[in-house]
Length: 189
Image 1 (cartoon, rainbow, N blue to C red):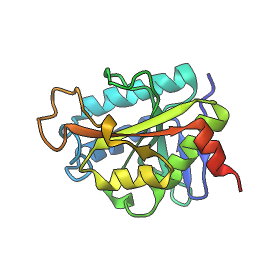
Image 2: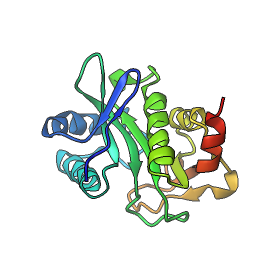
Image 3: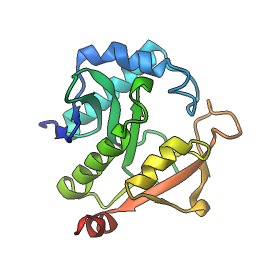
């Protein structure tokens, strides 16, 4: 399967390279980047996650893309689409996700890349719905979800099944959804 690549005004979303491993592991070891997750990731865990995403590209041609800026190539994070591996109350689904190195926060890259990933999801892959979820307290990520047109319903909030997440503010998740018909309607002039 030929991997899908995405180019936006400022970003390149591409399949993973060996040279992404070290900066990906470094990003996953940053306490600020990982503050809404179960904990920091080891190099081995980062490599396993990257290998899983690359396997998705090999099988489907899409997944969580490695991201770099067009003006200064080099890994800055990931943005993309994945099929969650844990059983979640709203399965089956395809999830929109993103994580950027701290030096690249506040520049609109997550929103720009997420919009491009949704474009591929709905117009090229013709998926019917995309979901995204995060802890209720993760306001920066929730803002990105809202900016790309996703909506939430408090009745769908859920506790994440990851046993590594302690009870409390990181375990309680909000679910955002965006359907293909809504996406297409919002794209019309």
